[in-house]
Amino acid sequence: MENKKFTGTGHYEHSDGGEYKGEFVDGRYHGFGIMTFSNNDLYEGDWQNGLMHGTGEYHYFDSNKDRYVAEYKGEFKHGVRDGAGRMTYANRNIYEGQWQNDKRTGLGILWFANGDIYHGIWKFDQMIRGVYSLANGDKYDGEIKEGHFEGYGKYFWKEGKWFEGIFKEGEPYSGILFNLKGEIAEIKDGEIN
Image (cartoon, rainbow, N blue to C red; front, side):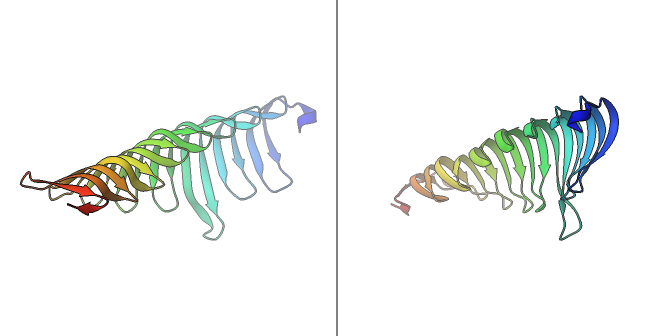
């Protein structure tokens, strides 16, 4: 196709079973187009110089279930998710926010299928710092590392007591625990003193 330098609207079938229908400029996908990939994933949106670039929708196909199980709607840059977008995962989690080089990076919200919600800063698909509201009514506001409350933060239990200080592996490690009566207790090395 590259040698023909076709410009206009057309249809191209790949040798691996994928196919593209849409606009071409100088033999490359450019403008609006729909691509069905060999694994049955589907992209519908903007193209630039043969790559997904601009705004579009990408649907992820699961051959075991014989249906689409996840989708991304948003911005693409040079073939990957980049910019603002919304991803609905196969496990029913939903992320909406910033992407960079195909990773959740920047400010974003993740609604978990179990009812938890995280709103905060992401870096390379990892939660860094934000507010994590649990489905049971508890809330954490602070640093997160590898999916655990880690570093400085505040934890508010739904019944009213709260902790402020350092967390280690998801648990209060060093800081002050405030109870419903306004009394305080010190936590040191994970133990109440």
